[in-house]
Image 1 (cartoon, helix red, strand yellow):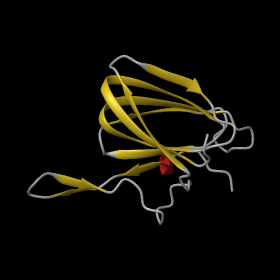
Image 2 (image 1 turned 30 degrees about the vertical axis):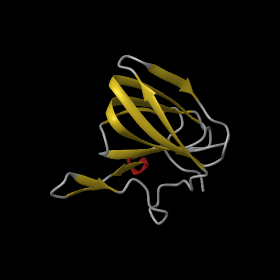
Image 3 (image 1 turned 45 degrees about the vertical axis):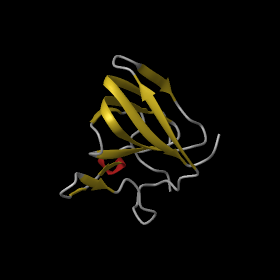
Length: 125
């Protein structure tokens, strides 16, 4: 089954409020996110940084922001996909949503303020 680039690629994250602050579960192996993480990475970016645009031939990404604010742009380059040729943009804020980006989807990140993003990949590199 080929993953599609749709709203189903966005996973809302629930913050459990506690007296001390909050707790957010960012991944659960039982969630249908379309990826089984093989590697996790953390990246710090300054405001105004553009990362990308790139496309992965082999691995899928599962990405969320730990801090900051970012615009994620995606363009589906998979010829057999029902969303081939479509482009979308998503704004991520800290620990609010996670996005799955399938291989074959071109993507780039523009950081609106200093940010840290965490991402998992389906294959190590």
